[in-house]
Image (tube, rainbow, N blue to C red; front, top):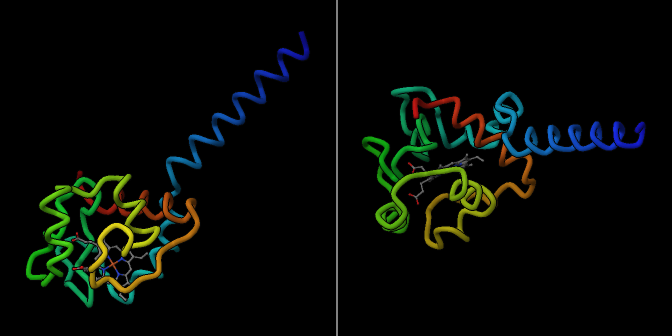
Length: 129
Ligand code: HEC
């Protein structure tokens, strides 16, 4: 009986841990975003910098920030893929050039899955989708 109890507690614990790791923590993501700030603003209606403003990225159209001159490569990718979602953003943030070979975003990528999940949670918070 005690064994079953301990087993189920362990399962609950592991599940909770896994789902929270998967969902990402926006407050931690905000810190990760410091790596992006040199090139990206994220406030609603904010200006484009070297890179486009990132308000409303998750669930929003690819390569669509107003007044920003995107590379042909990212525009073509947008025509093919449509919108940013957690999956393609994860791939983009892991290594932009692996997803869109000729992008002009010069960023090596975030190696840690946890950093990417937290960052995506933060991006989600800064949008209305
Ligand atoms: C050195 C500058 C630079 C850094 C640092 C940088 N980016 Fe970018 N980013 C760009 C540029 C330039 C583009 C436009 C790419 C293109 O047109 O090919 C871009 C495009 C993007 C896009 C596509 C936006 C759209 O409108 O479809 C996303 C999403 C993005 N960056 C996220 C990030 C995140 C998150 C980080 C931090 C982990 C980051 N970038 C770091 C320069 C940068």
